[in-house]
Image (tube, rainbow, N blue to C red; front, side):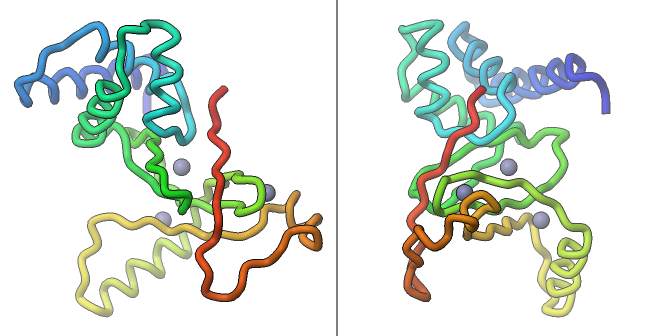
Amino acid sequence: MGTRKEKFAAEKAIFYQHIQSEGLRRTNQRDLILETFLSIEGHLTSEDLYGLVHKQDDSIGLTTVYRTLKVLTEAGLASEVRFGDGKTYYEHLYDHEHHDHMICTACGRVIEFVSPEIEALQDEMADKFGFRPTHHSLRMWGLCSDCHERADEVPSAPPGAQPRVRVRTAIH
Ligand SMILES: [Zn+2]
Ligand SMILES: [Zn+2]
Ligand SMILES: [Zn+2]
């Protein structure tokens, strides 16, 4: 694993290679979208990213941002993740450790975690069924440590109900 700068350069190279192989043109707009996305660690929607790039270049449309995120996903630089609020979030994928998510249904906080034991158990289960997993996403919904202290004030959902989630986007 290299420095942040080297990683950034590698991600850019992959993007341009992918763009070329798809017969797409390299444009200033795509450059700006790529650089903005790579500069943010966290989970963000196409609307979130659009808000950021639009501030710098108001000729960029939401569709361009959305399509570029799709290209980033196809190129293996971004992955889509859903937290149950009906939105699609994107996070960095290239050279990032695999992780899973806990989502607080009260405040929308998203906690990233990784457990080697859980990962190993999942592989064991897949083996048992002769299943070859290509990827997985483990998500838990519930209350974060701040919110379960106030849990008495939070109405609990009936069992089996879909949690109502409003995710807080981590844009710094
Ligand atoms: Zn996992
Ligand atoms: Zn919370
Ligand atoms: Zn994540």
